[in-house]
Length: 221
Image (cartoon, rainbow, N blue to C red; front, top):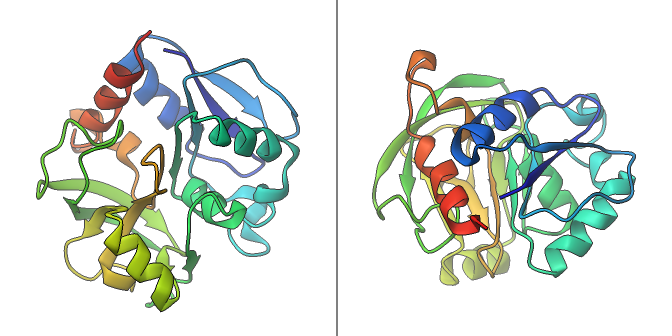
């Protein structure tokens, strides 16, 4: 399995993601700079956390216009799985690959701590090794993670079973405590928490290991 991590100016979790992917797959991911317009065929695309373009506009809005994102959207249309974490989730909603928007936390404060998540969806390549209802503990580090959508979109996301993870308890004001969603196909996942930073016991927890193991198993050549 070969993966690619898209790197933007201001990305800061690409190495964390690379370590988690290599640990699970045995292969070093490709690192693709945002100004590229093409890259080799891969089995997974990952948009990492950070502060692309310094969050100087809406978070992810400028990165969504980067040249590479045209190719990412084209690959998505062909069914290539995409995982967007934190800023990556923000970029996915700004490109329209996922519905809704991510606004300033309700507290108007940056949140950096471990939180509990409830697994809601297990029929994806990202979540198949969890059980529905599992409670996992994963770090968050964001100032704009408050998931919102209009009433019709929220009904559709809930009705289609696109909610992958919910916060257990109040975290950032997200509608219905949504922490992560998929597209209608289940092959694109965006989430604000950082599973890549929960893959090593020495770093405080391993509840993210199952996500990367599930990806590796599902996409193994």
